Length: 95
View 1 (cartoon, rainbow, N blue to C red):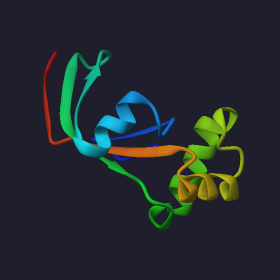
View 2 (view 1 turned 90 degrees about the horizontal axis):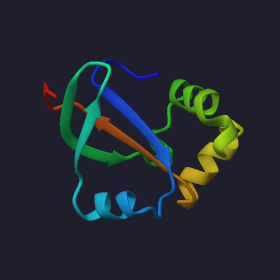
View 3 (view 1 turned 60 degrees about the vertical axis):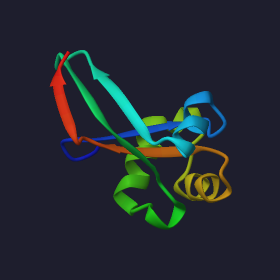
View 4 (view 1 turned 60 degrees about the horizontal axis):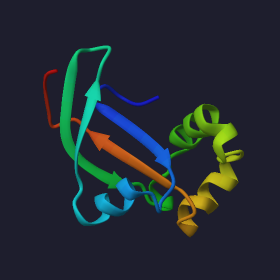
């Protein structure tokens, strides 16, 4: 769904994590299958940053979680009804 080293998270914009990330964008992601952890910063994707490829991938992956159509996804991101977060790997270490 994303290039190597990039992870997208889709969820509630009012969750504890999303609220914290708005003030402190640092995140540690555990990658159990790879046996590694990734430390990076999160970036909340804005509606004007949604490419057609990203929209299609999000709708395909999370369609049953609220991103039913491309237009619906764009509207929900623009309105702040959902959070689409991009995490780019800056360092990975063995878990």
